[in-house]
Length: 454
Ligand code: PFF
Image 1: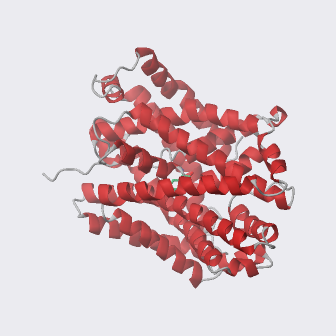
Image 2 (image 1 turned 45 degrees about the vertical axis):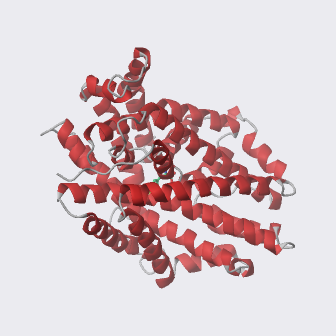
Image 3 (image 1 turned 60 degrees about the horizontal axis):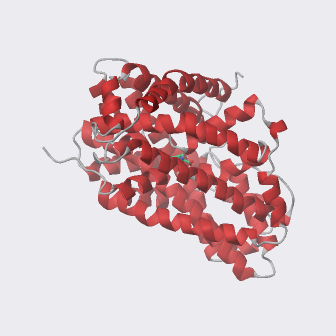
């Protein structure tokens, strides 16, 4: 039998997993949530959610992946044969696939803005909002960028686990971290930047409400790439000496530091131009920021050019490493379940994702009025179903599965590397307790909130 691929080093494991976690969610969602959710008070709650919910769930996915060394669908089939739990494995694979389709569209936009920034064309835009809607609503241009980023992802995945995923993460993640450090310094040196910092960091406990706490939980969950099938798939390539708890700590720390740093980049820059709370999401990075770059650096265009090129490169790297991690679960599934070769499996995933991505991209233009399901455009439908339904449901099932159903000996073996590491029994008990009780309750609350029932 052909030997299954694995990562070659612990550094590769951490960087690939952190690459999945660090994505657009860190850069455009986290800072705005901090700004509107009580500054440092929100950051505190967020860190609690990462520690109590995010990290245990991440470790739970690692346990399943590394114990079975299989893609999510076959992993659950092995652990709970002929049971309903198998559905979770398929859910992981399809959640990843769904996310890939619309995330690719947004990644394409970041590529377009990088090209525009590089060629200084962004400097000539006088109305950023009109420019963005004209671009995203066009037919061909966004499709070309979608295809380019999907192909970039394709050519990483097709090279396999070590030569593709691991090597690209070892290249892209340090570069991403370096860019962040440079941008933070730049942003701090802008006139008036301290106002933005004050706004971001001033703890305002009066803003903390149950809905802010739920947002922090949802953000922690999305940001750590939980229940997307990708952490479980990556863990299936972990070596036997990788320490699961330590890896989860490193990944969660990198992800949180990047998110906070993104706030340190955005808020001082935005506040140096005008004291407004920026929009969340695409509006922030594709409308507010180009405007900020133009106004703030109008007199020294070369600095503006450097800042904007670095910023969109950062976004593209963050998006690409995340896309790679969600391309892999469906690829690994096709490859192993149907015994296809990696090039064939990768090509099938890429072609279908581009096809569905085209529908998502056209949702901003020619297909804006086509709302085939639940009155949502294709883009909104893929986003809604994967992020608001599949993800929380997946989180609930993973925690219940590892907390209640999985043989406890498997959990202990994985956490202690079959007895070679010392992990206090109390730590394991707390881990199981969180998975059994706190996390399912928290996830059910998020689910109800996402569906707008709360
Ligand atoms: N952790 C990612 C983020 O914060 O953006 C979530 C994610 C989204 C992972 C899309 C992978 C992906 F393709």
